[in-house]
Length: 379
Image (cartoon, rainbow, N blue to C red; front, side, top):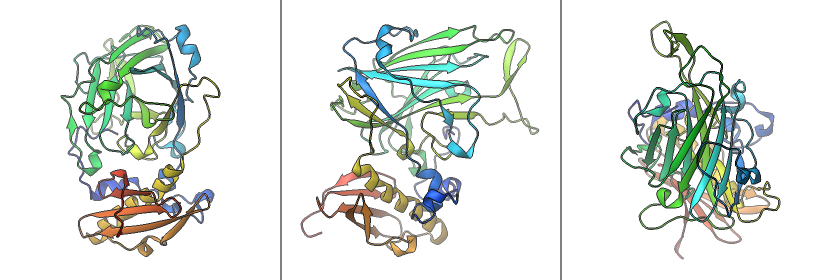
């Protein structure tokens, strides 16, 4: 779901938290503090991206020999994951990187390829499209969205923070130096034939998705957050064109959202649910990935964030009570003891988790900003 067509939700939005909380009695969460938010705590997908000395030619043809060193992702699934059936049409991505760019190839199977939007920065997801969401700093804030249709029309934007937290999209931002190309296996906008689909190649310069002059070039082991979405509309042929199906009130039927890493909720703008992108220069065993310890710590921060949202909806204030959420002051993660605490006023909060062994602290606030936090000596 895209929020571009409606007013952004505020950080204490009742609508957001009502929408995301789905109570699922999954057995794996039966005695877990995460049990009431099971759909939001499935482990995101991961991809270990290999370094390439030879960049791919960006022409839409994904059969270049250089792409053979990259592995295809799993098939895309519904944005809600196990809550909905698997998509009937296949979508996959693969990635490479070098010292200047992240390279993405995608294969979009589709028997009916259509795209009518032609102008840069029009709202491309009103067509069927392929989308990229990137958060290099892994804070859920300051992230980038790129959308492409089968004509290679591009809609690129920057968000200071998610819409649910009052984020403001910057439509004027352009991914400077970004290159993309599409190859259609069939014909575009011809309902009389059956197509195979389309492929796209994208080169995203690291400089384009960096802020100010601090170019975020990955190094061995760098961890970013990334996700990919495919928007697919139900259509029928009419007078030689593809026309979207409508409901009895004359509104377009909701689009399908198929993604690489399921969000658990119909909203791509929950960056904490995106997949993990790990960079390596080793070509050996490039499929191995283990969730870092600090990401396991952050799960408790996100639990507090979701709980605080519900608490604010009910009481119009935030709370510093861990007990209100069924949590104690200590939690064990990989047999390590972590201290958990909350500071709150009626209008804002911060939650902290500290490993008692190394004393490293991570924090989250009411806007969902996650960062490493340096406690002073008297704290």
